[in-house]
Amino acid sequence: MKMEKHHVLVAVLGAGGFVGSAIAAECAARGLNVRPVHAPRLDSYAGDAADLIREARSPAASAAAAHLAAEFSGVDVVVNAAGLATPRHAGSPALTGANALLPCIVAAAAAQAGVHRVIQLSSAAVQGHRPVLDESAERAPFSAYSRSKSLGEEALLKVGRGGTEAVILRATSVQGPGRPTTAALAKLAASPLASVAAPGTAATPVSSINALAWFTAEIALHAGSIPQIVLQPWEGLSVTEVLAAAGGRKPLKLPTWLCRAALSTGYFLSRLAGERLHGSLRRLELMWFGQAQQPGWAEQQGLLPQPQASAVLRQAAAQQGTVHALPENRRPRPKSTESS
Image (tube, rainbow, N blue to C red; front, side, top):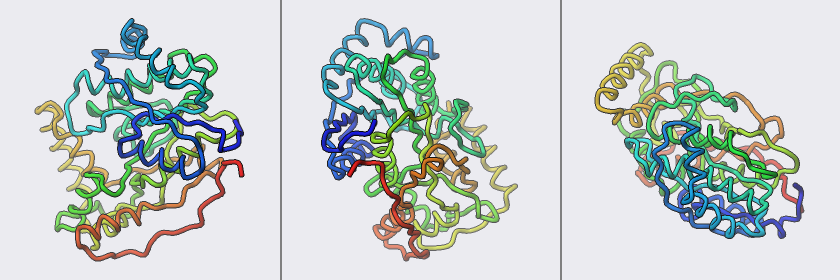
């Protein structure tokens, strides 16, 4: 799909949220036509993909799909950035509805409207504690939030979409101005609790909202087919560099065995409490050990956004009143796929 950018119409669900607003702004800055679309509120009681697909074919879901199909009239690309980002909360019908059922209904509506491509914003959390993230269909969710996202991926890959191409974009640990998790990271990084598992050189999936928005727009405009699952590219930071940028100080290096023992105990206690601590423990695990990423489609295509995670964390550090400790990580911005 290679079109003049001024003729491309992109519908964005969740355009008022943290991720959706950034994507809408990036698309508009490129001269694309952007149509914000309100996402319906849905509840789902599905326990597996088969249940979810049956729910997606119910009269109520079909009505929601028909309404969205009307909203998608004339649209070239649909970006679904709607959902509930509640990694610390317990499961609920609303969580499953927003993160699992909605993607199926959006895909069905896009197919009805003849949309060329749907981009579903998912999360690398669906692969859980894997040491290396990749673009495979292998998932290992560990919490209510990651299970809802995983269920959405599984069902979306199984439902029929006619001639509409569906792309699942797994976002990593996205940080940005005004995001509570970013402010919390900066506060932690500036405290004596900031620490990493020795030697502190592990890669981390911490990324910037700027890079995610840029990459999403690249997927929207890319000519030719795209794999069903793509992973947001790595921005090159280690666990030590993340904390130093966000807190203005070098983190403490802890023995690896101590970190693993603390996490093992924490997850055990969290399971006894209905996984209430899983989200916080996963953040701690990422702070200590990070998570590597296998180079994927983006690297093959040369679609690597300018790394801005360090700058975003520095901005958060400035808001916390900390001192910058690392030079900014800069490299030339690559040529985009948009038509000139």
